[in-house]
Length: 442
Image 1 (cartoon, one colour):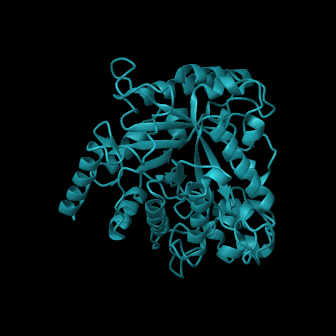
Image 2 (cartoon, one colour; image 1 turned 135 degrees about the vertical axis):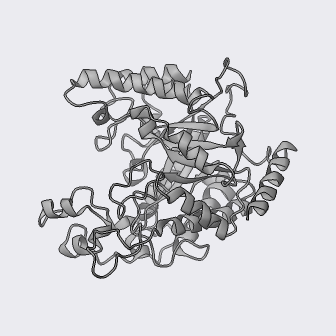
Image 3 (tube, one colour; image 1 turned 90 degrees about the vertical axis):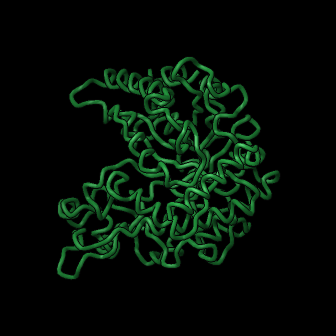
């Protein structure tokens, strides 16, 4: 196995060195005005900035996270000067809500959301931005949950151990437990292969936004999935019959198999599309304190996924970059990105940079709730700005977290009240973080 892996990697690197990938892989640090490699002083390297618009621009067209709204804001030009890429979400339940009505069929109840996504992508491209598109969630018809009325007794009882903590279920009584995973995150029984419903949905996105991108809007990057080790369920096999449904003892990790199948399917679609840049697996950096709910990248998930990709014959190549989320490194000043990169070294078959695997941080930021207890709101805003500046500096330093990093993505311009790490308040008012982030990346 080691010899085959080395030979394949050697061939990919030789192809890149010969320039064979240059015409088909959009360089993540290559937008107009970006510095060439090596510019910026000792130890520093260029770092491209991305902005995540959240799924709300598709679920709720016209909302504050709709790019057509964002681009009209008086503060947008300052942010646009440092942002090269937008991360947009193709929410499957919104875009194809009926089983028997195809994606793009004018008769679909998802037509308004699909046309809104088209228009946002077109506007972004017109503004000189690159779009990263991520397929998100499952419509209930696709994963067998259509009979589960959200919040009903049947819904709350269905595989409860894979959807919430035991303590949260007990505390909620007849209500919805804190952190309860919605039915739209349940893995579908038909999997994620090319002939699955999911595979056909993603193929439809590639056809619409790559093959027919001149008509509907063109994407440059597809990111396979969002935080599969946190959001999707189940993460593990059932526990033995004698164990509690909330108990992970005796069960085995299974989520990595679904993710590997997704990545292998997208690999085939990208090849057919002629070199589409692919990002994955977009892991959450959450700790696995409750292993039925979270599969930590620090505790076996990464290695299991790499093993499964190898078993499936995943070939990777220079159009693949490992993506991950880095809230912890931003908020806490940790170095988990460095540890993750070490796990990938010699195993991940994607693009290499700075002498090791290239990586893209496709979601991150500093939540106000994570900067300390007992502080005033103004003090938290000040600390948020300081931590964002520190994070950019550390990620740009090739001797710190910057080794191999191609992209640093901020989760939202205007804050999502449910995950408050935006650069501006939900009403658009400026926070110190806005100027700090723009200045650090200028």
